[in-house]
Length: 293
Image 1: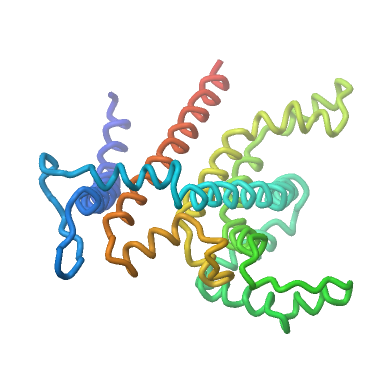
Image 2: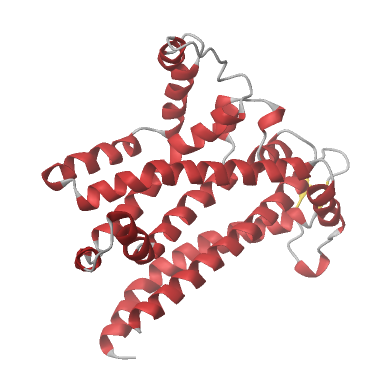
């Protein structure tokens, strides 16, 4: 390792240690609760800090509930909602990011500012504004009512929850996509056009493959928080028919006498997200090697 590499490693060490410490310690605490015991009188969780004394009996019960019991529907619903929200987010976000990177010109900074502006407003406040828009007397409901569409958006509707997820997380998708597309070598697209490719063919054969890393990064960036989201559903639905895994975790930890189950669901969800993150790291590593070649 040369001097420059050692210098940057030394500069990165405090931040890496900080992130590792504030991830590993809380996650270990969750595991101690998940594999600990319950106070027989007060029904509070009693963490078992010694891993040698962990009990996995409750884990088996929760796993059975997820695979073939009452939580199976919640787990499947969460995946359907997140995948649907991601597809809609890409349908909205990719054209916006492409336009910013390719055609925005002098308006680019203004448009980027407008995309970043929602980050200045608390997520809860933005969701409450969404509730007002979708209420029976809200602006959006009255607008679609002009076309004969009368629908109670806040009455436990799955589409409302999915739209809420899209509304809340699509800015997180646009920015990394824009950062990727803005750095592409557009001369390759022009070369493809010169060789006879149509705009669609050049986009499919040249632009999309070059943007794979950014697409994967943007997808992971919004999928991770979506899987654990529960407040969007609470604000827009509050119906058992639309409950996601995050709602079950919140219920077991804060509103039941079974906090162990909530901690176990956290571990299961973290494992699922770790698999998705591993896929992302593996795919981006392959893309990097292909570019080097």
